[in-house]
Image (cartoon, rainbow, N blue to C red; front, side):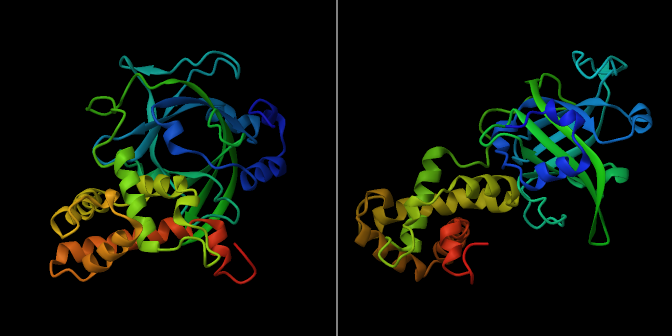
Length: 318
């Protein structure tokens, strides 16, 4: 296992290998934390003109659910010195706002899609000088977000230009100061489904997919749905996320008054199949649209699994 400290003296080739062979990062594990950053791979003269150490933050915005952040300038007391933010008019000096997003639909160099992407063009406070810069972010240890590695690249006219700007991030402390005029985020954002609601959605997904393993495909309940929900929370438009809850509740409780006498989660497998078929042809547009929406999401979740994709992609899973 390679540590952030060990990468301080690594070559650019080694750093790039860690990016393309890095591990996924759970955005929920970043939420609410400040990380200590250390620049790597830049000539000393460049570091003296910019910075060697800095802080990056990860803040879940209430209402939108976006994972946002900003850079904090530090006094350059030494790479191992305690973090001491620069202060201006009594507040830490911050700049370069960004949003953290999944690597889907984002132009990037080959192999840079192992983790998350820091996108400076989507920050809460626009910065035109940074809008073309993106930082892929990977974990150094599987399943841990304590130490991360990032690198910057530019997107210009649809082309990606790599830079030698690598950096490590080490978890440091909880966010205690916000640059926005609103309270610190709560543990659950309004648009995010609760654990119970996600369970209901997955039961509907399973009924819509309608495979139990007999056809050689895995049953929906056996696949890992974590990545799907992480991407949905991070990438789906707020309007889509806001609309999912009423659609979900409609399909869950409609069976009570539609001849089944109980909610969807109490139905037998045969009853669930009959209800989904009936709802897909319901005279009410909202009910039909709810089925179409849940069917679309079910397919996204199901085909996110490598074993499933392997059945439909020549030569196996991509």
